[in-house]
Image (cartoon, rainbow, N blue to C red; front, side, top):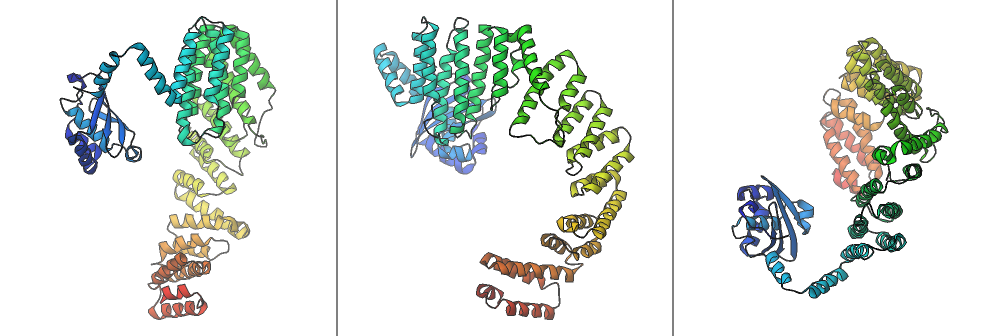
Amino acid sequence: MKSKTSKSAILPVDIGAIRARAGDKVFARGEAYHRRGCVDIFALERNRALADVQGSENYHVELTWRGKSFGGSCSCPAFHDGGFCKHLVAVALSVLDGNAGADSAGDRIRAHLKAKGIDALVEMIVGIAERDSAFYRKLDGAATVATLAHGDDTTIETRLRKLIDTATRTGRFVEYAEAEGWAGGVNASLDALADLPLPERAGIALKLIEYAIDRIEAAIEYVDDSDGLCDELIERAGTLHLFAASAARPDPIAFARNLFAREMASDFQSFAGAVRDYAEVLGDAGLDEYRRLATERWDALPALSAATRLQGDASDDYRRLQEILDYFAEAAGDTDARIALRAKDLSSPWNYLMLAEFCVSQGRVEDGLRVAEEGLRAYENYPDGRLADFAVGVLVKLGRKADADALLQRTFAKTPNLELYDRWRKLSGVSARDRAIELLEAEQARSSERFRYGLADLLIHILMRERRFDAAWTVAGQRGVALNVKQWLAATTEKTHPREAFDVYALRVDELVATGSNPAYEEAVKLVARMAALKSAEEHKAYVATLRARFERKRNFMKLLA
């Protein structure tokens, strides 16, 4: 692209904006690069400048802008670590100069190349390609398509399959640093497929794109795809596949069978939502076949409930088939069928919630409430807060606050937890508080064994929230209360309950010293110092003396305690 140096190419911001974006320190360094003439701009366009900045190394910079917004990228480590770097500052300042691009490297290079003959340019490009494997594969793909333009489908398929094989081959695990280069090679092979003329070669393009998708999916587990490059490749290949299918107009029945098999089998959802995306290509005959295949497979699946435990990825079949059949039911305006589809898999509270929300979205509020209440009963031992919230919200909107209160009380009594308490307290105020505490205290009296597994801790948390500190300390004296909960209680109430807090801190000191590590000793000594404010000087002195006697062999602790 020819370099442009008109007024339209001037960066529409001032030096102050550049300084504010980079910060004073980075700006000063970039300004020094600019003053020393380290910037070589080789392309200056309407909203972009490309440049090299010569510092300790040579860095490639792209500065972009649109209105008052500007940014860009740089190949230096500082840009990847912190953003707008000194090299971007230097380029921005150079663009602000009226002479930027007047004698750019880009213009000099273009003039030089124009003076070369075609043979010399060919050799130059081939030489570059030989040192850049991704560029080489891109040229090879384009050349293959061009040379085979008048060849037969078999020859084209053989050559392009080989190109795809070479591009997608991993050989060994592709590490993060190599993943972008690998993906670039695959993209080059997709470029070749995109260059196949349509509709003349649409049929062979369709086959080859499917082959490329299969190869990419097979390679994914051998590639560090932290940046989602494989997802981008599959997405691009999917777009090419749809274009090719639209041009090829394959047999609708055979195409529906192929597409359905791919949608159901892919681990990467390469053809997710295919029935919707390819509806025009499939036509009435293909859509009927797609629905027949999905219905046949759906009918063979058993209904799932809370008692069901699926093995492996079996739940994917339910999800995919439900989405396919829901497309047809939605098109037919059949709400009952759409509800029935969602009701087939109720193997989790989440599925109950999705069904309940769908019912409400379709104006079936009572049905949604019924589903939510069924879900809460089905999973009463593992209640889902979102499902309870939904049911309570619907009941309140229907003016049935008493029923909402009763639902929360039943759920809390079965599986008490702080999240449920907060919902109940918010709905019913102090009456919920009193009933929750009464329920937990009754449970404490009835089953001290169960209290060892968190109910005492929960009761203390509630009492603390309600600022009933005397009652909280009473519970803390029972068995089964976690030490960290007691510590939290002690830290909150040490001024009002100093002696109780002192006893809890003493337990913590013993625990820390028993670990035998210097960091633990240091924490213990800090806690001992804090404890001095909780008893009289004589009492604290006596306590320290007992520590010395008990832990005299812990020499490092003794040194810190001195």
